[in-house]
Amino acid sequence: MLKSATIIGAKLFVGDIMRLKRIFFVVFAAASVSLCLCTGCIERKVTISTEPSGALVLLNDEEVGTSPVTVGFEWYGDYSVQVSKDGYQTLKTHQNLKRPVADRFPFDLFADAFSSKIYEYNWNFKLEPLQPIDKDKLIKSAVGLQKQALVPIKEGHPEKIKIPKPKKK
Image (cartoon, rainbow, N blue to C red; front, side, top):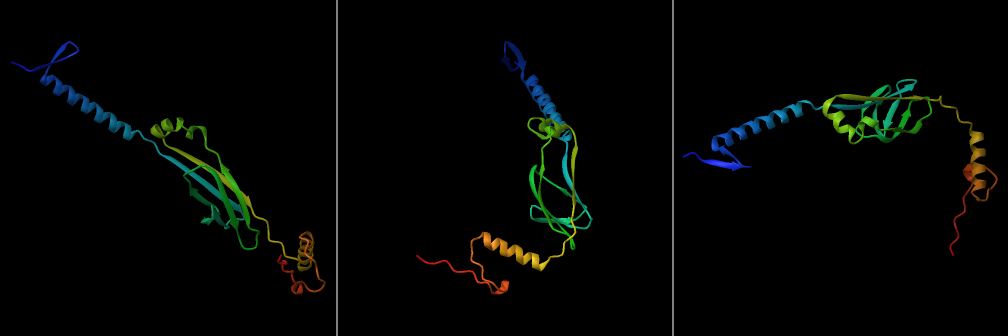
């Protein structure tokens, strides 16, 4: 006598159940492999260039190279940028990278799964030549700041000016 099972009023034989299990496994394996092969790749890059080129670039206080330089990044948001070169004023600024709509939930799930994308951004900075320091102007500025700070000023050389110590109560 053949063994059978009743599923929703239909009789299936043990051989049929094993065949259905094999078919389900093959379909599941094929779907899993095809899903893995359909995954995309997202690459994010920012290129920093300066005028003049050859300046040292720090991104979030980390040296990334001399300009022009291309750097990969993982997150969007605020970045601290510092650019310096001999003979030019050091530039310290912030740049904001805004996330594109295609890279936001839930759109990113579909975009990442079925296509490869490269998001590229360009930042350009112009460095100003270093201005020579006028010592007399600097001393006058320091005296003016000292007056604003309400500290008494003694006449004479700036090196000889002593700042009074706070009185104890």
